[in-house]
Length: 294
Image (tube, rainbow, N blue to C red; front, top):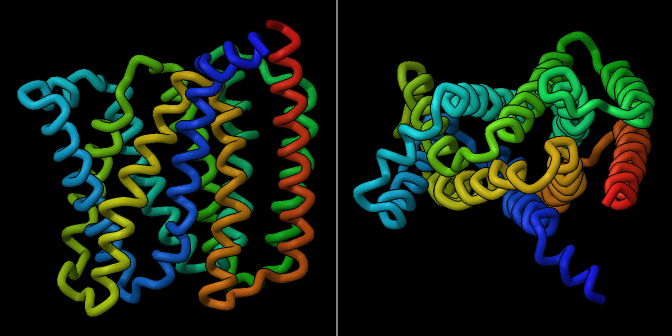
């Protein structure tokens, strides 16, 4: 009982709470992107601007005169993450608009394996043999998803592959910069995204329910979820944080299926089942190995 209590009060538990809480809040993201009828550039503009405003207000309320100091402390790596996160958001919306939600999220679920590779290459956290086996199986699953597509349908899946790589890069850098506060980084990424999209956006083209869905997405779902998930690598290895993103792989398509009746193909379901099983086993083996070293 004492061991369990110590574990629950430790950094590992804090990291899991942050990561799982963030992903549960993030799960309606794909559905809201589909429900908003405005063009993707206007959606991205408001998504970025609302995220910036929400988190800036939080910083002003919690740090008052020191809010700008929090931004200044993120350093060049923090700005690199902000830029990558703006790109990541753009790729996510583009992929959701050009392929099925299930395909986007299944391909994105490769992020934990790519994160393990990046952590091995750049942080010296060497990936064990099981990671390379899992990565090979994951690659085979993604190839099978691509094989179902005609040429004109590939663009959304390709965007999802790049999306997985940028998410892995973000988690790896945040693991390296554990002292960085994720909230000003996410806030600045929103500002960058809004600035990049403004020249091509039609900000007031949103109508009716678009504003309701956009408000939920930009004021609650995105700022809160990513402020939590990007704080998790302070307490958990980056690949383990990436594995928690598997929750969105299950919940995201399920919500879209229930609300919009977008049914995944049989091939996607089979590949997704194999991929999720592989990543779950990989994660369980990793946590068991880590526990054995303590």
